[in-house]
Image (cartoon, rainbow, N blue to C red; front, top):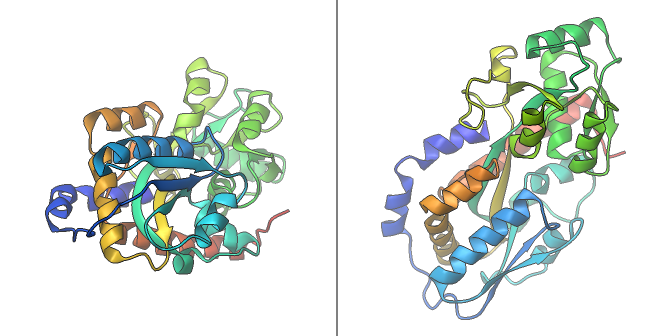
Length: 317
């Protein structure tokens, strides 16, 4: 859903925003810090690519500051809304408070700057599972209720919500096996501890190519450029769509002119051909677009998953 909306927003936008965004007078005058979660994840990759490009364009150092847990989020809340402390984070920024008490509200405490990338989820199974399509998987789950399981990172993560959305829309009972992280969940799938997973394409592509997992479908509305010839989940389960996104935020209260400047500079980086190729090589589709696009995505996705979490009675274990 996020991926297809992004494509509609992006067409023709970049050249308009470059000429119309209001400049932020005298900004920046000192180094900018980008907070993000642990090293190695797609958010960290995006933050470092953006930081490098913005450093060259802005004439001031843009540095990445990794924080574990929700440390990056909480540090941004405490930062001055002056454009010198930013946050790169994924959708757990707005889904986590739906699952457990949190010290922030994503729509209240953050100023959306820009989407940075999105990556579609996939449906993969262990090769021992006797299914070749999403249709087969749903049929098997219906005749074997609560016998199949899926692996995912902790409750509220993208992996978990992608799986629960599938369960809800397909009307099947599949057991959740929680892992400490997405990497551990993948190891569980490779070892046959769990039957299926709903990971983003970039993280699972090597295992698909090696045959250690079987790819059933990709969770985009239309066939994906990352996986040509692979059917969509929606072909068997109409309306199912799931993409993981990473975005850039400033603290709430940051001047619109500063947000516009940051958005413009992020877009300058993301529309470079070499940068786009770097993202695509990681299984990430580089995004861009006005702050309003990100704000709209945040509102829609929060409402979407609030309903799923309430209806399914999900909670942090």
